Amino acid sequence: MKGYPKGFLIKQDYVNLLSMPEYAKQAKEDLARLAAIDDAKATVEQGTEEAPNPVEIDNPMPMWKRAGFKDKDELLKLADLYPDIEELITDLQKLVPATQTAISDTAEAR
Image (cartoon, rainbow, N blue to C red; front, side):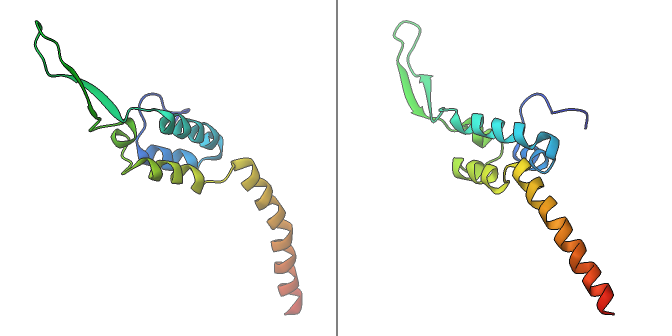
């Protein structure tokens, strides 16, 4: 893949992007934007040209559903499953010296 994808993304796209440190932040921002879209209602025309009758109904295909999420909560949970990437890198960097020490202690004990 070259660069961040353009166009409409689906759930699997977000999963893949969140696992890539270089795109995780932008993917989380895009998930937040998707969650903020208020398209729960849609207006349909049930009248005629002579007597218009716009009616508001529940939107059968909101953006989060088109992206492949079963509900808005699933979308929000996906963003929360992935911690802030900089925080994750910092935590991993702290673990490396401790792991190296544990490995060397094990090797010395033999």
